[in-house]
Image (cartoon, rainbow, N blue to C red; front, top):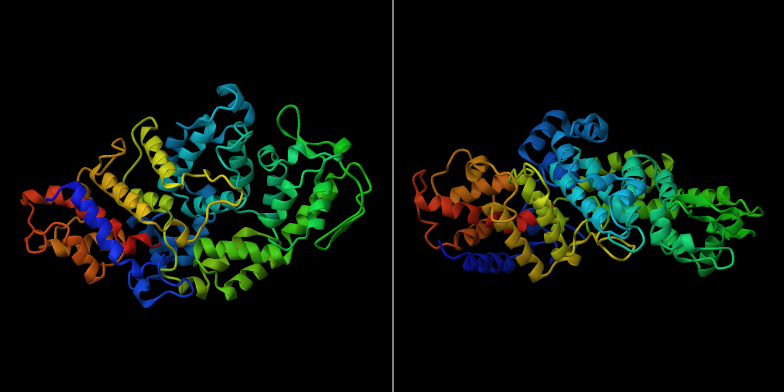
Length: 504
């Protein structure tokens, strides 16, 4: 076998020459023939590629048994799904779901410990939770109603925001989710609402509430000023929790995006909440939520027809989230979108862990620490995005030569067990992926691709994998082949490096 350095160089060079066939390089409007050829069109596999962080053989078998509707029914009732492996890991991260009081009691003021545990918990849930659709939707809402972690001032409240706002309401109604977000000390701190007073209304939260969380760029500067006045009084108390301070509420009639209120009383909390409800039910919000769901689960350019359908479902069901998800995943537009989404660095890492059958370490969090730090280097560690708009969710945002090489390195590290070495691995990784050894290395690459991606690689891509080690294409395979043990992790990693695996 050639050296690791040579293999990595070849892995970077071979797929790079084929990037004309990946979504990052192709026009995003429709799936090209070259792109869709990289994946099979099996509707169950397509659903699980989008609605999970990586479809294992067990996931696919269950989905085929239940059917699309049955699988969605099961996944949309996450409380009924046992999750023992993930629960075991989460017990090692007690601050990831801790109340503000518990965080304050456990660590020093402004400690980053709760941030770190929260990010590691997100990795554990994505990698090992049986509630895959729920975790995917949680990540969507966390990115939509984003609060960076770490960020100043929310060291003690950010973990609680994840539990009491995002996870609690992820499959409820958006109106309830938005109001819970508006009254949580983490959001009030992150977007400066806690410092807003009737003498000096702070416009930051009012602006982002409209621009990012609801209607988009539909507002005027007059709307921002009026909304910032209406929201005064919603703040954080001395104990660190949400309070409404009537003495700091600015009165005076408001007219904001069709919401009219006399706002004559100092106790204006009900008026502020009515305004937030109005925004949640606004047609522009319905369209924005529908478009972002399409960007997340369907295509980098949201199909206009599906956006309209989903917005209608959202409004018809009074902002309920589950009907919108059902409509999305059972739509013709979704079915036609094979190959139109590319994995982010986080999704690529998690899919690799799941498809290789890597399990949590027996104790501690060293492997999670290493995986989290890998994502810090990739710029995609959970919640670690500084601006309030959340991570970008289109291929072009993550396409770069350095990013591709980083993925290649991680694939090889995970396939070989070099790093993080603490993860629990199958006793024989190759045999766990391909139980019956094929007769040739070319057939082995086909079998690995079928197991890891769902279909064989295009012939040119298979040739690129085999070209990495010049002896492989013409060497017969047998169980006594001394070179097989050394070659296998590299072949596995190179299949993961392929353009096909980058698609979801």
